[in-house]
Length: 301
Image: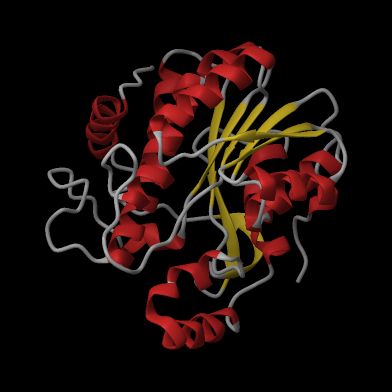
């Protein structure tokens, strides 16, 4: 397969990049490529020991900071410290996420854990760092979506999925919410004439450690299912290409969405991906934004 590769990433010297979930999987590959091309990369991770190990593997100009997206106090502390140390931030990659197919769990703030981590934590983080992003000359925010967003539907009257909970459905909803957020962020940035670009990407079906963790609640059967799932996935190096392109390719427009080109966008070269109708709906974007502001206490744009 040919197409866009990491070798096409322009020189990143002088840029400060924050990558959430950078100690493994897609985040690790993304952080590594950004550092390899000269960026100063902040590895924003929940487990700092794993982050330090990742930093040793990456080399280059990197630092490790603690960030637990499932805890708003942690998000605020991280944003305050990294924002003070880096007045201008050129790139924020909202990469971190969880997949939980077992019983319903909640975050430190009482949010359904997948929504709280995958979307609400990143909503708060982006807002708290907006001043630093504005201070950069050509800043970008990249939000990591999923092909599952296209089959999902947001119940804005039950965002925390307290009625009839199903783990896989909740994951799809969290990724739809993330996608709606990235598109609505673009609308609002353009409305105020901001130069910040909000772009999106999804990795198709990619081999990461999220799949085995997602099936851990099913014991040995879960291990078998996770192993079989890995057979149809692409490498994490290829899966990270859509978000790397969204983060670094010159001329990326706000609202652009990148993903794999082949087999229903599950694998293959990077291309522009398809948004679901609900993800692109301005009315949904406005309602979700208002809800996220109320839930996180972070208001911007």
